[in-house]
Image (cartoon, rainbow, N blue to C red; front, side):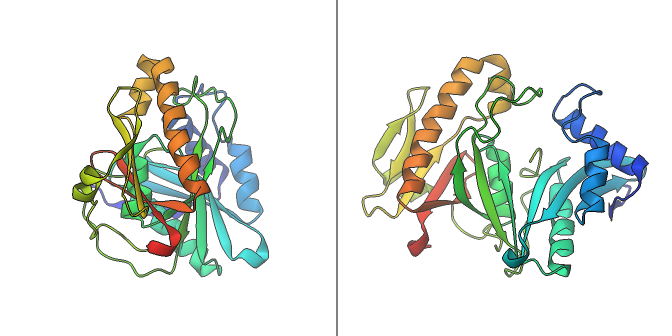
Length: 273
């Protein structure tokens, strides 16, 4: 097996390869990648970083990050993508780079309907979803998001938080765009005992809330990317149903802190973590 190497990319040819890789992930025309090479070059020149994972000559993951306001001590990850099993390596490279330059936190956004990304971000990395953004990018025309509204969750990753070993058997990894919580129960027993509050587009329970008002659970579809391609109208119904649960919960002080293997978010109040 070829070893994986992670390196920062500065040269034009390397940045062009990263740009083409992102285009393949988001299924855009070769002439219109989501992050053109010249844009990546400008971000690097201004102090940002492009990290790339290689196995031999093959690119298997990449991520781009910049710094936020000087006083914030925060980095912002603009985009990340990786093949299964490579996402952790890419994000840890970003983490080491950011810590080395004085950052304490890193933020980024992801589609709340993509369960595997939620599990990677919230469980494997231990980040917390701290903000729900409605139609954040407006209409998108790439091959993954086209036809949907671009709601996003902002996650905040505490870079200096204690790390714990994690093994998810390759089931959870980064595919598009705190301390590890993998040792925690997903609370499925408590979830099933909690009263239902919302019904999903499929007629089944979409959300539950415990009687103490400390936890909310919300379900997402099994594979929204496939659903979006097969039935965009149904995918949009899922988007708006989940949006209703999340905007209401975030307005009441809840944050998203977990994602079960069967596609249920756990939301908790900040003062009851």
